[in-house]
Every structure is written in structure tokens, then in C-alpha cells.
Image (cartoon, rainbow, N blue to C red):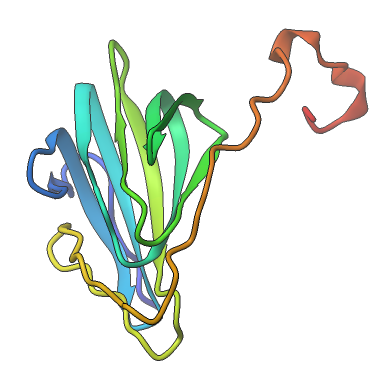
Length: 153
């Protein structure tokens, strides 16, 4: 059994150049993908950057902001955003903290994930059109839901 520890006491500074107020811990990394836990302090930021792999940014506590291309949106715990390969993306907090699990997957099974020490490696693949992505539509006001139906949405 291989138990991976993360959270307070196990994190190290993370992120591409220009990143501030961010620590993290790699949970899994091999040619099939890369999984990390990230902790944003108040005013923390992953500087906008491009990554060659599709990435899922899952907020597990707190909240902040995310960016995909020129589009920006608030994000809260229980929400996730897809950062498409080849599209500039970033995340930041204002007056709150945020924790997220980041899952990075190579777009092609024969191309291993190339994240080393928390820095995205920018590559170009001239014969492949980059994915285009947008943020998902914001769900209705959580206070307006019917709690008797079970799941919130």
C-alpha cells in the first residue's frame, strides 16, 4: 500500500514563473498523468500560462477566480474548470484561501505528462489544433434550490 501525504506540513512552493502565495504537493506523477494538491493563500496566484496538456482544476475548499483564455469567472468549493491544452489559463484568490486538486492528462496516450517540480512545460505540436474551452455556465443561486430533492442540482 502506498499512502501519499499532503496538506499542511507536506507542501512546497509551486507554480510557473510569476506565481505567488501558492504551495502544493505532488500526489501522483507518471506517464499517464499528474495529480497535485494546491493551497492558495489570500492574494495567491498561479500566473497565466500555457500547458501542453488538458488539466482539470477541482476546488475542494474556499474559492477564488479562474481564467481560460480571456474569460474570467469566480469559482468555489465543489466546482471545477477544464483548462484545455494550449490555452492560457490561471487562478487566483482575493481575500480568501483556496485548496484545489489538479489533474493533468496528456492529450495523446503516447505523450507522457511533462510537469517537473510544479512548472508547466510549454511545447508546440504543429500538426494538432489546440483545444478550445470556455467556463461552464454558472449554476443558479444555491439558496434557491429545493433541499428535499437530495443532490443540490
